[in-house]
Image 1: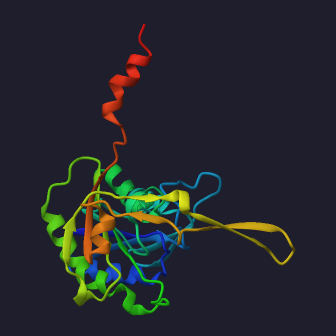
Image 2: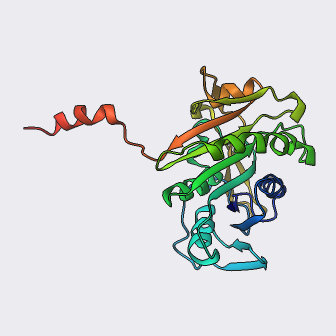
Image 3: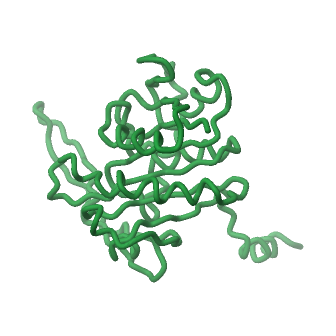
Length: 254
């Protein structure tokens, strides 16, 4: 099995090392193509207003001066000598839960894989702010990543779908299991924007996500993580709200 690894935290991110550890439990045919620098929050963006450069670190190991989407596109069209059987994106340092997935470069890299008809899985490690960046914060992902991926390799993926996996912020032996759940939602009305001034006295603004409320509806990814479970969520790329089609069509008749 040929596996392509990518992320949005950048080629040198510690979570990327964890992802490769996980991937090598399934295959030795591993290809790496990731952003050269952190691209968190890049979403499904493409680099269109400047050239994208490709850096080769070793055989089958590349970095791209662009977004996660750029990285997957470059891997599929320029880097690899054949299509991968699986794309793994992550392991992101931080949650990609609820409607955060619309901003997530980690999920968007998997989306690009799904658009190309390739089985794709995004993986994220929810973290507690008291971990202070210590290595053990990826313990749950390292231990439970293979357990989440293996069943997905045997499951059929519908066309234009992907799977989003989040690991709870607790030691691996405290994780209760795996739940397959739907996407939850946040209350972004409580998000913060922090104003400051740079050394020259100019104003700047920094988006803060720490104050966002979580709506823990039953059966959601947010609830699963809060309860101590790995959250596995199938996602689809078709955003059409089908129940509104007839209602809106009626507005344009006659």
